[in-house]
Image 1 (tube, rainbow, N blue to C red):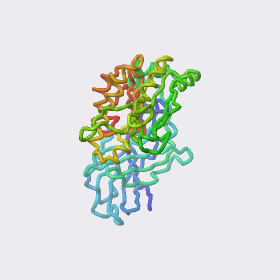
Image 2 (image 1 turned 60 degrees about the vertical axis):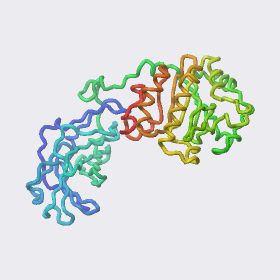
Image 3 (image 1 turned 30 degrees about the vertical axis):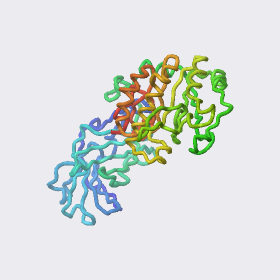
Image 4 (image 1 turned 120 degrees about the vertical axis):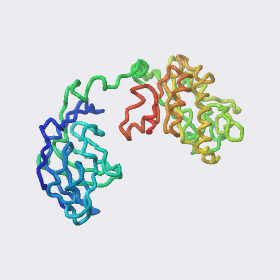
Length: 395
């Protein structure tokens, strides 16, 4: 594994590689990447191809590299194994244009990921710049690895720590700051909420409906505890991973029969019990706003029945209409405050939620399992707009 600086590269004025980012957790951060050593490095990875590597915004110097003498400009080139610059391979890992980089994972005193596309065969170079104030300012790239289709250059350096910058700095304008809708401000003002996870798992692990026997259920006692705590909103888990639903669902399953994994198929209250209805009535009596949690694409009962993904989606759409339509949505004083999902099934669900469910519950803040997608790819979605979008769905 060899790391060798072979030629200084002229990149212009230091400000030519300054990146300003409105980071999710640290406000506006300015990264002066011109503070990285302005050199071209010869680096070998473990395959063992060799690479010419320039810093972000810089073009690799090819003057001492016969293999790339006639290649178009780029920041990173892949060379032949063993022979390197003396071989006959010179593949561009980026297009040599630094005008529209993709920025991810930027945070003060953490680092920044900056990517450039346009390389040969769709390749791209991603610089994973890691904040490390302990290394010398002359420190070059630590490694390069192929994470198809990106070639990831890992580089620890003090310049990757960034500096705070004021709002209004180019790239950090106030227009880019997420603004909550009036409905979201109202949601925040409620401050304290309760989530009630009471379902089949309370009695048995995804067992027979007959095992659901809440003989001492008193939803008014739940609400008394909430009021004592100062709760302003309560969300009931109407369906979780087992697939058991806390209301007598009339949804039709493949073949035309009723969905038969619900309170209606328990002997509790002679099959006439309805936990959801009791919950809504108790909350309404004490002026607590309500919401329901409904997990998508997580239904053990559906698996045991052998239903396909499309068949499950059809059932879920029926049950969402029951939950938030005239059957139960109108039981909530002021309409439901929150519709909470966990998980997703295909990206037709977000459009269904927005066009159909939102029409049934105009007062509700739709949030959901798409928040887990947001955490994976750093996409801000539901809390900014109040809607679930295709972007939040990960497409």
